[in-house]
Amino acid sequence: MNKRRSQVYNEMKRILKGMIEKREKAIRMGESSKNDLLGLLLDSNMQEGQEHGKSQDKGMSTEDVIEECKLFYIAGQETTSALLTWTMILLSMYPNWQANAREEVLQVFGKSTPDIEGLSHLKIVTMILYEVLRLYPPGVFLDRKPYKAMELGGITYPSGVILSLPLLFIHNDPTFWGEDAKEFNPERFSEGISKASKVPGAFFPFGGGPRICIGQNFALMEAKIGICMIIQHFSFVLSPSYIHAPHSVIFFNHSMELNSCCKSCDFYSYCEIGPF
Image (tube, one colour):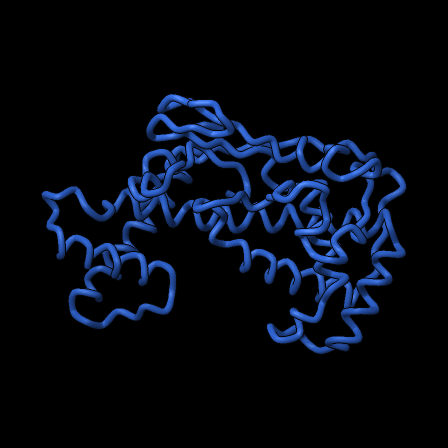
């Protein structure tokens, strides 16, 4: 398994390095487009290097760019697929909400392919996705490490200490969500996120502050389109043999700590799980 993992890692690194070098050459020749993530990242990085010079330790190395590409791919794939999976499971467990969502989707789109304009009219689907993110967030906790001594809530934390924010506990705490905190009830989001909990800020599946997930809007849009296309064409139920026993599967991305750009805000990420 370790040998295979090493082979996959090296192959991915080789492919990404080739893409990066090809794109950098195109940028130097004035042929590169800036309409995708890699193009924007490399163009910005090269401008930074030209303005400050490599001796100033500005910009990112090829290794940094490779890690950023891996991060965007992994973080964007695993988290949204987990959200869609739990959404289908919960809609199977609560067929009334599946029926409500289908009625709304057919009313907005009919049998046509969902479009961006129509997504803003999906109130029920949005409520369902928020409630799924509350009960089963792809990231079960967030870690932050202050790069200097900082005071929070009257307590001074030294540089380097790790502060852990347990999303799963907070999202299921009756103090914030009421006695039905562990129940699937999308209705709690009927008036938006700000009024869903008793305490503002108790819902943060994508993190918060300057390090909030930059893919938040894209992930929700992607999930809405995915679930719309599924319930447009299918009804689904749980297998009789299904046993509800969720557990966390964690991956750590070591590159988050190493990226110098992360240190520009008060707290930069130490390690992240799922939506960061």
